[in-house]
Structures are given as C-alpha cells and as structure tokens.
Length: 220
Image (cartoon, rainbow, N blue to C red; front, top):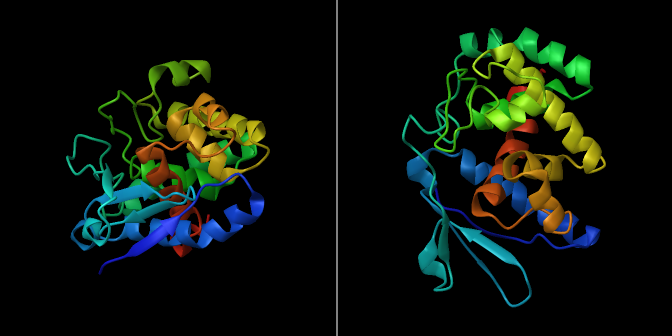
C-alpha cells in the first residue's frame, strides 16, 4: 500500500482544521507495517504547505526527513508494527489509572504516549538516554520526583506529571503538549506555540494522536 499526502502547520485555526485530516492519514501511514510505507519524505512548498510522502519520486523536491528506527536497542517497539502483549499492558494498567486520577490526565492519553514511546517496555532505553516506559531523560525524571526511572511506577507518575504541566502550559492543546513531550516545551514556544518543524516531532505527534484516537485505546 502506498500513500501520498500533504499537511500544513499554519498559524490560523481555520487552516489547522483543514490540516487535521492529513495528519490523521499520516498517523495511519506511520502505523502500517514497515515494508508498506518505508521512510518518510517531505518538502515545504512556496505557500508554506508541508508535503509528506513515502514516494519521493513523485516530486524532485522531496527529501528524506525521517527514517523509522528498527534496531531493537533503540526504543523497542516504539516505531514497529508489532504491538505490545496483553501481559505487558495489563501489568501497567493499575499504575496508569492511579497516575491519571492523581494528576487529572486521561488514562487513554498516557497509554497512547507509552504505546508510541516504548510499546509498554519498562526496560526501553533510547540512543539519547531516555529511560523506561515513558522514555524520560534523567533530568526530566528528577524534575518530577523520579529517582529510579526503571521503576514503572516512578516513571509513569513522573511522565504523567510532565504531561499535565504541558497540557496546562498549552491550554489543553493535546497536539502541542505532545510536541513538547517529544521536543521540549521551549521548542514549541520558539516555534510560536506551534509544532516545531523537526522531522521526529512531525512524525511523533500524529503517531501518538493515532493511538489516542484508536479503538484499541478506547476502553481506557
């Protein structure tokens, strides 16, 4: 299966509403098995519209912007088609529910972040040093009271507190909160309170939103 789409990240709310269907298709593209869509290519046209495709031959302006990691040592399960096991999820559900209630964050959103970040793998470690089920760097963990990021409870509570602060900072805008979770809140602010134009972040936000809106997580 091949997909071609365009997406813009403009300032106006009207244009952003028009862009949301493209973001949804982009999220679907990311969720497909690797051989179906390969890497992600992009270019920005003269009108400021950002185009995404897995078919770079369609336009000579396309440049590779994101190569999906496949090595198991780099954020296991985070970008693969393989889903987590029921056992992996079930053992974390009570912790996620408690963190959601304690900090006023939807359990479904926490699940979506975890699904994208680590695939519920509590031993996940990224090449950038992010640790655990919610892939927190040590500085962020310490900021939110986590001493041992390999402990699922500490990791999830710290990550949820961070999500709560980001949601507050960006007035409940889930997309911007997720962009901040991936790229840092200062990157979102520098981008004018928009999703910063980093290839990983442009891929990450629709990926998590795809999980967040999926029937798979509707039960949480």
